[in-house]
Every structure is written in C-alpha cells, then in structure tokens.
Image 1 (cartoon, one colour):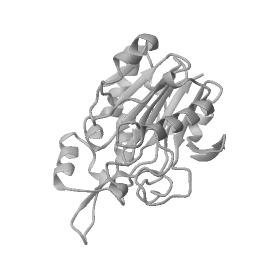
Image 2 (tube, one colour):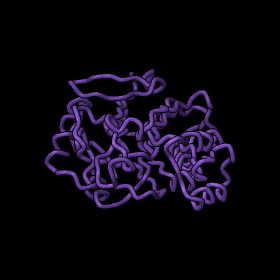
Image 3 (cartoon, rainbow, N blue to C red):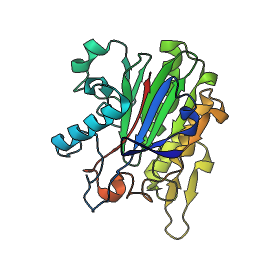
Amino acid sequence: MKRIIENDIEFFKFDNLEKENSVISHYITTRQYPLTEGAYDGFNMCDYTGDDPEKVDICRDKFCDVAGIKPENLWFPRQVHGSDILIIDEPELQREEVKNMTFDVVMTDKPGQCIGVSTADCVPILLFDPRKKVIAAVHAGWRGTVARIASKSISAMRDMFDSNPEDIIAGLGPAISIKSFEVGDEVVDAFRKSGFAEELYSKNEETGKYHIDLWKANADDLVNAGLNPGNIEISGVCTIENSDKLFSARKLGVKSGRTATCIMLK
C-alpha cells in the first residue's frame, strides 16, 4: 500500500489496483487531521453510526470533488454483517430504492459509480476484473468471513458478469490484526465449523484466549474461489495499532466514525 495526498486529503491505495488507474480509481480514507479522543474525530463519510449529518455531508462533498463525481453517484450501503449483494445495474432507478436496504457487498460494471464499504476493524475488500470491467466492494467482519462472503462475491461476479476468477485482482484493506483480534471460543468454533484452516488461529498462552487472522482467512477464501494468490494484496495495516489514523470500533466504540474503502470504473 501507498499513502497519497489529493486535494489536501490523505488516502491509502493498493499497489496492485493503482497499476490499473487508467481504468479504475480507488481510495481508502484516513482520519486525516490532528486528533482528539473523539470517536468521530476525523474524516468520516458513514451516515448511520451517529456522527453529525452535516459533518458527514461535508466529508462526502470533499471526497466527491477528489473522485470527480456527484454525491448521488456515491454508493455506501448500510451494512449488517450479512452476505447480501447489491448489483448496481440501473443507478437512476436504484438510488431511492436501496437507500433503506442493507447490503455487505456492492458490485457494478457501470462507469462513474463509486461503490464502497465502511469499516472500523472489519476487513474491506476491493475486487476488480480488468477483462470484464467489473468492480466490487466487500465488507468482511468475522461473521461475514465465516459466511464466506469473499468467495460468494467471486461467485456473484462469475454468475452475473461472466468473470473468470483467475483474472480478478483483490485488495484487502486496513483491519484488525491477528495480534489485536482476541476472540472467544464461540468465534473459533464458528470458523472451524465453516472449514477454515487451523493455522488461522493462535492461542495466547498467557491469557488462554485465541486470536484469528481475518486477512488470511479472507485471502484463503479468495484463493479457494479461484483467484491467483499473486493477485491478492493484503494491507497489513492494523486499525487498532493505528487508531490515530484509522477508525477502530474496538478502540473508540461502535458509535464512531468509519474508514471508507471504495472503487470506481472511469
């Protein structure tokens, strides 16, 4: 990943997706500014976690200036740790229809529609098929990961757009690291029942608690779905350890801002 500044706004970008910048643009927002301890302090575009709506609109307008789009072409669905997928195929008709619906995956083959997910410890995943010109944004918390939301997204791209998984490029954004992601036995049991490899779990002998690698779990799921491992980039940036730069629900509370991870076909 690399850090860039556009119009005085700081973003992270994936190296593998940035190589495709003649066809797509993508952004991972940061909190930006010198921070206090406020849970919403910084650049937040998420409008359903309790932040001041006027501030959220200001952030969205600033982002849209950078992306070169109108606010109505920005798609950030309300997320519920499910596995429902929103296909943006008729933007003009869908805007009002989907406003109060919930989705954890958004995908489209329509240029000029910026799709994204909002996270604060969960894994954001961006997918791009350069052959079929299809993009997707995926919200993979531990529940979504257990439900195989990454591979389900690949299946949807294959079924809806005739994508070949071997062509797809993936970026797994900032999220909680295995070091910080301490879980209860019920979470480990859920991963085991879903068939994830034992190497994803690490037990802290001092605390007796397990830790899980969400990045590797989702990367393995993508590989099992047919992606070339060389096409998958993992950010390795922990939201807990970098909560001064990225929102973290575990550090700041659920009522806090969110990092936006988004992608658009030009």
